Length: 516
Image 1 (tube, helix red, strand yellow):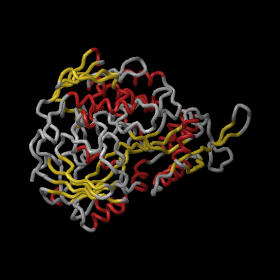
Image 2 (cartoon, helix red, strand yellow):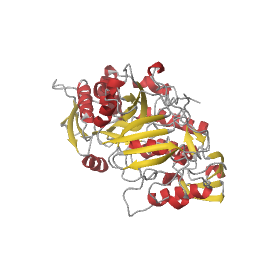
Image 3 (cartoon, rainbow, N blue to C red):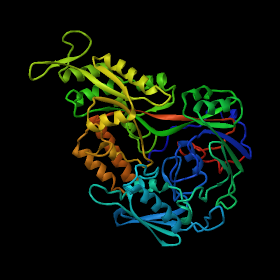
Image 4 (cartoon, rainbow, N blue to C red):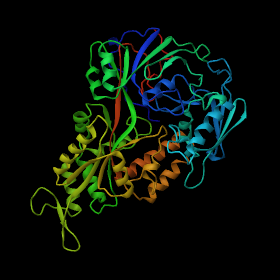
């Protein structure tokens, strides 16, 4: 088993002050009017909800599922049935027991919304619907999950455990505002667009947290969050702004780099006559990811060659040596595909079967981010790098909606986009023929078979082996180019966690178990 190798904790913990019994964390929040754990509107609020609501399963520092409310589980019928045995000492913050009926009601609320064809927003946890056919309570402390099965939709696999991380609320409160939870903290005060205060949950089933109170002032912009830290109004902040990089080496601050699930990709239209496998691999040989990260992202990204996070058990690092920048290899591949600079104008061309000259000039679409032009700058840098080997790019910025329309129509050559990757390591939606995220029109019977086989592997070892095979074929076929995962910073004067793997949506993970 491959363990998480990348450590995100600061190199000098002596810079941090000892954590006290209360801490103030500044976040950006303008949309959260009511507390709705199943329907979060802002990414940082998910980290707050994470310490209020327990789940069946938690993901540990090695990105493996561990029991939480579920103390054990087993599968049967080749993974079609999963039985979860609940702890009998878990209580909600009001002292009432948490039972299987609460788990089932919480899951069914998510599933009902995911399956509602009359709405467009199916909720943050809607991917549960891809895995679960039905869920029921066998008794007060036993939950039975029937996984979806069948050739095209099977999820009777190890990956289903990652979907059991949804919040659990009382069955009577699934559709209520501010439902109670069973996590280490409770909401003691909340003022929309102003602040939230969390206090230690006296009925939590583990040891009482040393940090008794978490105060969370809300800010309307990323700059306001950083200013609040600068002027010592808060002890720590969560930020994905590149401006936060200024504090990563401060003498009075420590920073934890946290990883996000935002995967930046260069999509290459496999249906384009110019973008043959040789040309796609040539493009891969040219792009300098580290230069892009240091130049455009202020170091706030981690380069990746696959749609999995580097350093984790699901990443095939044995293939990394095949992804080095190599302009000579790129030129060889382009020449092999028949491209040459016949008129010596710096742009490659070749003769078509009809005797016409066709230049290697690609339509390159990119959508602009609100208040941030980092993606457009990245597109320009990629275009400069590709021109070094004679590939011309015609960059056109447009709205997200317009780029998505181009992708759906297949009317593009290159597109710089990002994917929000699911908690479960399964990239079938990107790589299977005709699937929802396969905008590049990649068609491989072998890859589709591998993805289907992955979704039937019930053990971590078998699941990992299929992921390795998927990545090996991904390297060989080069359907598109993975660039990086975006990262953010937790910047703090008070170290509140010892977790190695600091992840988006769980940025307070570990605060409940820290000691002075």
